[in-house]
Image (cartoon, rainbow, N blue to C red; front, side, top):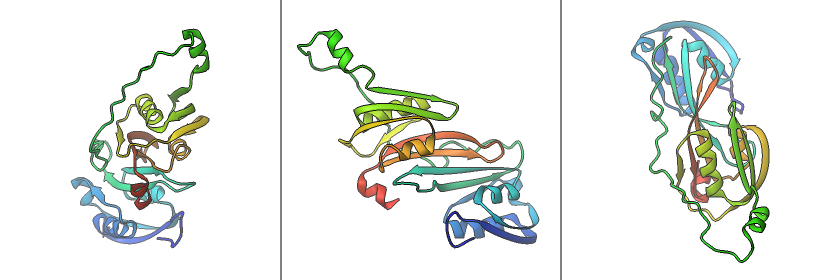
Length: 222
C-alpha cells in the first residue's frame, strides 16, 4: 500500500490463497474482509500495481462490495468500514452486516403557537424554508435557518434510510445546493453528520444505508 492518500496497492501473487491476500490487505487497511466459502477457497495468480482500493478489489473477485462512511470536515475521503468478496450471482450481504444503528429518530412537526399575523402573511414569510429532493442518487437541499436535526430527518426520509440522532444539536442550517452526490452533500451540512452507504463494485451502484448525527467529541474520534 502506498504511504500517502489517495492510497494505491501493488499485488504480486502466484497460486496464493485469496484469503492470504485479503488478510494482508485487511491488516494494512484496518478494515475487515468477508469472503464467501466459494471465494475463500480460490487461489489466484496476479501481478499489478498502482491501483486504488476499488480497482484492486475488482481484480480479486467477480463480485465485491464496500461499506463506507462519509462526512466530517472539508474534503475528507470516505472511510471503508467493511469489504465483501463474493462469487458471481451470490446474494448481496445483509444491509446491516457492518452498519448497525442503536436508535432511530422520530420527528414531530407542527405549529405550536398561534401568531397574530394572518395565515397568508405567515405562510408568505415562511414559504418553503426547507426543500429537499433526491433523484438519480443526487441530493438537492434548500434550508433557511432550519434546525440541523429537522433537515437531516427530511433528507433521510427522502433518501429512504434510517436517521440516528446520537446528539441533540441546536445547530441551525442555512444552505442551498443542487444535485450534489450524497457524500459531498453531507460534508456541506455539518462536521457531525455521517452518511453510511454501500458500493457495488460490479455496477458501481450506491446503496444508502444510514444517516447519523454525532456529538462533536464523537465526530472528532472517527
